[in-house]
Image (cartoon, rainbow over the protein chains, first blue to last red):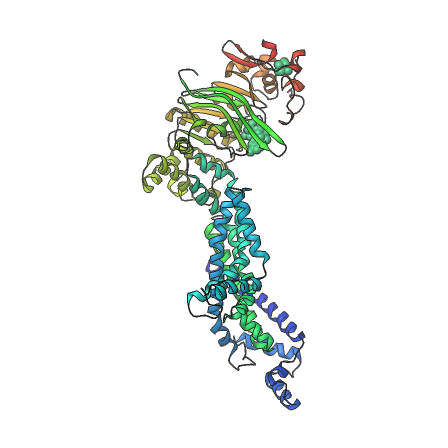
Length: 306
Length: 325
Ligand SMILES: Nc1ncnc2c1ncn2[C@@H]1O[C@H](COP(=O)(O)OP(=O)(O)OP(=O)(O)O)[C@@H](O)[C@H]1O
Ligand code: SF4
Ligand SMILES: [Mg+2]
């Protein structure tokens, strides 16, 4: 088990390397010169040249990548071009906010999506099934920023129940997590419905009923437990989507997380921070998938890792 | 219904409303299961054997299933019971064994859990007591090291062992009626023999009646006393096993017997080619007019094409055929 985890973690290194390579070169294809942005409109050629030297941007791009990698090997993500703070510090300061938002959103989405999917599967093609299906569709078809803005208009401006942005109390997280949850709940509802319909029609479900078990026990203990594998797979995948969605949501709600850090850094052409944050996103995503795979073994006794 | 009848099915009609139309999978079946006896039910694939069994415990999803008629168990109609009442009976006084030991056990629950949950439910004992009873059942069905096996998941067991576990589960509450739907079909021949032996022995011990569903006439000969032959949702013949084998009345039964190799028959009737029943079972959506067997029958007479045959009683046997009118 421990060996398996170690193996999995080591095997993520090439993936992260791939991400960094793509990212590194793509960033540098963006229009705009970081030195120019940093120096401001009024800077002289001389100033810009100095800044470029300071950032190491005067060297050939492959050399730059080499330097980046050798630092990365020492777990050094460099310093922000904008604030001069170590990137790791910038990321570390915002990571908890993003995690909080993501976890709150995925929890909300599961709390709605899994029961809705189960009810839909137990009563397929009834009004309640259609109701949940259309609610889920509604959630997925609305752009995240638009839904965010609408929620702000209704709950912050008109009703004045909840703050429009920022952090501080539990009230601050309601609207952003709701917005983000709406984005992923559809997938969770659909997969729960589909896999429950499947497991409810299996022979072992009939066996369970033939024992005289209550329908609730048949559904939860016998059918749902078997349906969990596809459900948690999707939840894990959605986590990646959530991180993407966080970029928009955090911007709309002025939520000081990694998503906003990326946006701000892109605007400032702050290469080290962009690189560092996206690498952390990649790592998070990989870790979540590892957790999902470990959960498989916990849920399904047929799956064992050596 | 006779005095000693434990289960009495009267004019059971089970229909499925599907996209293409209405399928009448069981069409007016009547039969009795007496106390302590094993009743065999035979017929080709799709003739409605499983649907009959599932109808008894009301295990068919409805919709699409629609069940009519009467199923008297101990004099009480199972079809008019509330869901709670029928749940009291399921797994308790009537239990069921299914064909596929590979798929009918839940892969994510331990064997012991799956057996003990029924015991706990119906006998009102604690978890621990139910568990030790489950282990005891595993011992009774001769699973080696039952206390270890109880903690294992179904995938660790072979097909034969799983079917033993299914039998342990079905018999754990000492049912008065066991519905065994092709209990040995999915198993190797040697394992089949072991399972048959086991069922025979347990039947004596627990004194349960059995409805043995199969298309294996050899199994019927071995285990059942009486046999019901079904064709396209109808009972076409009913007789004591030895009568049926010696002198099948219905042309379909005749065909069934001709289509299987018989050890010993050679001596009585001389070497004979195995005969297949010609033609295929028609779709339940296009039931032939008159006798539904007539497109495949070699002995049909004029009336067979036009009118449904009556159920003829003859020497305590029943046969659905014009020939015996
Ligand atoms: N849920 C269902 N919906 C629609 N039709 C069904 C359903 N279940 C069974 N049937 C139909 O009812 C008929 C009888 O099926 P049944 O399973 O009882 O056959 P069987 O005699 O048990 O056959 P086998 O020997 O293959 O098990 C078949 O034609 C089948 O297609
Ligand atoms: S009624 Fe006619 S067609 Fe049907 S089985 Fe008898 S002889 Fe054959
Ligand atoms: Mg069947």
